[in-house]
Amino acid sequence: MYKAPSLSTKFQILSLLFLLSNPPKTTSSHTPPHLTPNVNPLHQNESYILPPQAPPPLPSLIPSDFIDIKVYLAYQVIQQFKSNITSDPLGITQTWVGPDVCTTYKGFYCANPPYNTSATTLAAIDFNGYGLGAPSITDFLAQLPDLAFFHANSNKFRGTISASAVSNLSFLYELDVSNNLMSGPFPAAVLSISNLNFLDLRFNSFSGSIPPQLFTLKLEELFINDNDFTQPLPVNLWKSPVNYITLANNRFVGGIPCGVGSAAETLVEVLLLNNELTGCLPYEVGLLGIATVFDAGNNRLTGPIPESMGCMGRVEQLNLAGNHLYGHVPESVCRIGSLVNLSLSDNYFTSVGPTCMQLIEKGVMDDRKNCIRGRPMQRSPAECIEFFLKKKYHCPLSFYYYYYSPCHHSHYSRSHARARPPPPPPSPSYSALNRHRL
Ligand SMILES: *[C@@H]1O[C@H](CO)[C@@H](O)[C@H](O)[C@H]1NC(C)=O
Ligand SMILES: *[C@@H]1O[C@H](CO)[C@@H](O)[C@H](O)[C@H]1NC(C)=O
Ligand SMILES: *[C@@H]1O[C@H](CO)[C@@H](O)[C@H](O)[C@H]1NC(C)=O
Ligand SMILES: *[C@@H]1O[C@H](CO)[C@@H](O)[C@H](O)[C@H]1NC(C)=O
Ligand SMILES: *[C@@H]1O[C@H](CO)[C@@H](O)[C@H](O)[C@H]1NC(C)=O
Image (cartoon, rainbow, N blue to C red; front, side, top):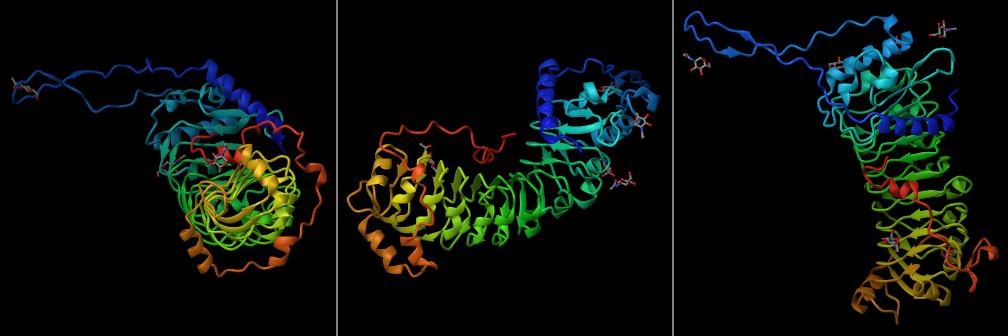
């Protein structure tokens, strides 16, 4: 097995060094177009015209020109792929010449494969930000069996990830095809990549439903935001062992699945914002004891905030803005000492207690555009009355919602003396909402 984290670090350092030491080269090596006199026998016109452009003859390379036969095989695949590239605004493929694949080809990295540590093979590809276009990457990936990473953020690859592309990739650990032009149903082939740890499909045009098997993969990070997924979220969502998951900016419908407790030990950040989710916040959401980001903003969630959410003892960013939530904002939530941003604007909350008032005064909590009597910048009374006359939906377990908190995290409580926590480090899932984030 590849030692993933160390390879990952090495890989990042490698790519930095590579970029610093190899600024894009201009191709001065092209021979100028060869001019030949074209004498027209009928008109004796002696002007010169260009013959059809032929590529300069390539020296044909043989296996012994390469550091390893595996690199020679990769070379052949790269050359085929190069001829399929339809767009290359940065001139990346100009570096894809000659036998030194491991040292001079931009985007390619070699390493010793796990099954033979004295061999050298093509182990990683990083095309992030290259803008390369190709109608398909299937035959390319299919023939590079030792790949551990394929990172291709912000390119123009079309098609999908097909079964033949990945069935041979037994070492693939990270797959990032974010911000490309891929489309079609969820690429179910990724479900068969047994070692996959990181999957990033965001900013493409995948549509339809996501398969429940996605949540049985042993992923640490799953980014599928900004596609066209439309169906309900699979009921086993929370069985996934992921630490970071972004489902934002799709059109997922239906409720937030129950069983949140299954993710209690693993889930650190979850982004559900900008979908069409309905129903109530599940009572068990309070079991997300290590979550630092929970964002379900801009959906159609209704009901009160369950008292149990006060048990999310490490949450820093809690965004429920832009829903149809109502009732009293539980004081237990406002007592969470780690909160940096509690966004509840644009709902139908009717009251806040003294702890929440303190948060509002500190600028941590946003209560604008609700129905809170005595607070500035609320909805008009008419809007509020209309909402409460129409409101029909009742959440299950409503007694518990209001009155029962399953935890007593007094040690997390925001004491009066305590200073605001420092701003959190950049959140991986919020940065995934940026198209070009690598
Ligand atoms: C020769 O060919 C060129 C291009 O086809 C044309 O512009 C030019 O007028 C021709 N000259 C004569 C003398 O026919
Ligand atoms: C290049 O495109 C051709 C024609 O579509 C295809 O047969 C071939 O497998 C492709 N090769 C690679 C490496 O992408
Ligand atoms: C390991 O790789 C080296 C270099 O490619 C090769 O010479 C050797 O035969 C390989 N060993 C095995 C067991 O395949
Ligand atoms: C997978 O690898 C096998 C053996 O190396 C090869 O025969 C087969 O063509 C590969 N599959 C694809 C889709 O390229
Ligand atoms: C708090 O979070 C909301 C929702 O994500 C965001 O719009 C707002 O800018 C954040 N406020 C601050 C001060 O970061």
